[in-house]
Each structure stands twice: as structure tokens, then as C-alpha cells.
Image (cartoon, rainbow, N blue to C red):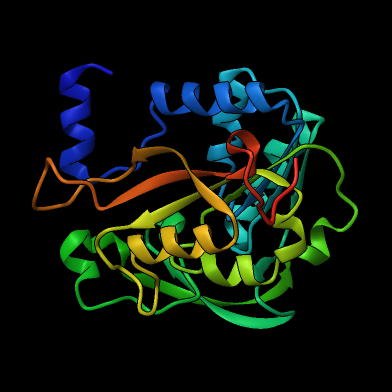
Length: 243
């Protein structure tokens, strides 16, 4: 990416799916022969579109709870032909929840904002709330077969999604999550806690890429995309995941 453009993205704190990040992920997908991507927290389909732009032609199954974002996602998925869109959130157990919808819809979360959130970006503030349906990952993935890449981007709610998807994790060849350095949401795990938690499930980092940059420290990331792989894939050790 051009240095000037990159500096603008950093100054604005914009999340950007850079070409290198997408290419590295596509390389992983192709190497593992992945043919289905489960996209949890799809928003309007930015992630799925980045995969299509990168050359991935396999199945995408997306989940998005925000009404307006889902409408845009559903339209994009319908035009694709190999992309499903489902209007719900995922968590540890079925039920209902209140979603705090941000002025930046991709920053919406079930969790409350911390006091430091607005210092990072004032646009993160809650615009309104919506009552949403919650299912579990294992429920929605029960009928899905194939070589799975699981992407979870739920603004601090990733662990709850994992807690409701233990069986699906065992069938996943890669798990992509956005992990925070700066805490924007109350109760979200810390970067090192997420790494340790995933290690306990038999997953280790395969790729780590910066996502957003600090609003007041332009050369410091506030979160990272971390792609995990089952330890047993190439290391010959036991793991909870199977390939």
C-alpha cells in the first residue's frame, strides 16, 4: 500500500483489509484445501468480499445480527450464489441479547464500552440498541461439512462464541480472530489471555497482522488479526482439532 494512503488509514484509525493480509490468508486457505468459511460477525460482508477479491471461490456462511448491516450483507450474498447470510448473533448459549449498535456499525458489541473507548475513536459511541437472537456456533454449523476456516469478529465476544462452538472447533483447520491490545469493551479478554486460551484448545498462531491503529499513537496497533491453526497439523502432537 502507498505510504501516504497507509498513513491516512493510521491517522483515522480505519480498519483495512490490506492486500498482504488477504494474500497471506488466501495462501493459508489454499494450502489447507479449505472449501468453507464460517464468517461470524460479518457486518455488511467486508470480509467475505475480501476473500472473493483474493480469489477464494468456496462456500461462505455469514452471521450478522444488526438489522441494517444484515440487509446489505444478504443482498451481497444473494448476488454471489455461493454465499449464505443468516440474521442472528452467536454466543455460549441460545437466547436473546441487547446489542449496542455503534456509529461505526462494525464496532457494535453485546458488551458495554470502556471509558477509554471514546479516547481511541469517538465514532465508536453507541448510536442505539437492538434486541437480537443468539444461537450457538455448534447449532448453526451442525449441517456444515467440509474443510472449515472459522472467522470470528464479534467485538470482545469471541470467547463466548467459542464456548458455544467446541464441536465446530474440532472440525476447523483455521480460526481467525481480532484480538485487542487496547480494551474498548468491558470484560473482553486480553491478547495474552486469548493466546493462552486457544493453546489450551490445541491451537497456536499461524499468522498475526495489525488491524487498527491507535488514535493518538499512529505507529501502534490497537488490535491484531490472529489466525490460529491446530498444533497437530504440522507438529505431530495431539490436538483437540482434527484435519
